[in-house]
Amino acid sequence: MIDSIFQRSAPEGLESVIRKIEAGERIAPDEALALYEHAPLALLGGLAVQVKERKSGRDVFYNRNFHVEPSNICIFNCRFCSYRQPAHSPGAWDRPLEEIFETCHAYQGRGVTEVHVVGGVHPDHGLDYYVRMIEGIKRELPDVIVKAFSAVELHEMIRRAGVSLENGLQRLKTAGMAAIPGGGAEIFDEEVRQKICPEKCTTDEWLSLHRTAHRLGISSNATMLYGHIETQAQRIDHLDRLRRSQDETGGFNAFIPLKFRRRNNALSELGETSITDDLRTLALSRIYLDNFPHIKAYWPMYGKTTTQLALAFGADDIDGTIDDTTRIYSMAGADDRNPALTVDEMRRWIEAAGYRAVERDTFYRPVVTK
Ligand code: V47
Image (cartoon, rainbow, N blue to C red):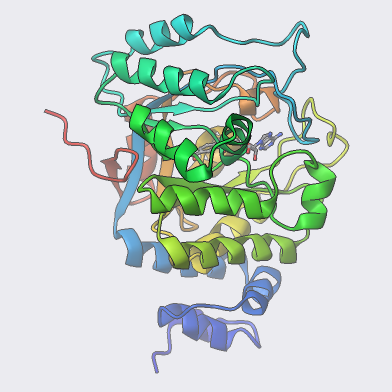
């Protein structure tokens, strides 16, 4: 049996779980909890990096993307959300389709490979409307991959249309929706979910929507909103349900831990997690989700400094240029400005962390620029 530096410096009781991780074996929920609670931060980072390098070697990915946020009007009132507005309130927006298509038109020829479409669950717009939206986006940007609608939005539009999940998702796929972002997962524990977002789709409905999408050949991401009222064991339970789902379908591309941001929402009285908690949670996700190919450090949420550190804690993706086009995190206090990064800046971060910067598309295929 190897006697690595990690095994030699392991706190008592963690030797066997460290041995398992180094041997590429799956760890159990109680082992993950012990690691979270007792492993020194640097040890956790080192183990996560080992797992990351087994998956993606020296590569760290970024992409060229922008977001379309069609409306912030939402029938649901999640307590952590700083973004949603009821219809007719002064801060509400509902962008006409033509305006969305004009925005997309302006991205022609700019090297973007992905448009990420996500917004509130609008009271009036139905499946046909969203099919038209996707078709229009594809007309403007035929070569760009459309990653659209959280499972919460999809669940509601398909339910209202009175069709099956298969049928609804197939219609959107035919229109051009090629992938689904990871939003709306929040925390799977039913009691916590009931407290922070009682109205939106249930855990089982979220998982079932992604499972159905995967069966139809639509791959997706998964998120976890952490750092509010959940316990560490409930975070691990969340990861466990994702790992089991991925065992079944293999359709998830990336996992994205999302740190709760407290400004302008009903949970503002809670603090925010420390940077060490963020890095522990990230590293643990990389170690636990042994069947997820990628772990994304979403830079608008962590902020620029933590994102650079995240590359030493198992992340192999930092998302993309975004180009000022998302407001979810700036409204929740992650930064005062809307986020944008240049390709040069992303490549510099990755190289400074000792990795090879690889531009990817939504499916993590390297993008070769001519
Ligand atoms: O589901 C909302 C989260 C998510 C807050 O798939 C908040 O590539 C923190 O899913 N503090 C939407 N988080 C964003 C999302 C996403 C982001 C980046 C990449 C991908 C991907 C997906 O944002 C929501 C919710 O969990 N969120 N409010 C807040 N105050």
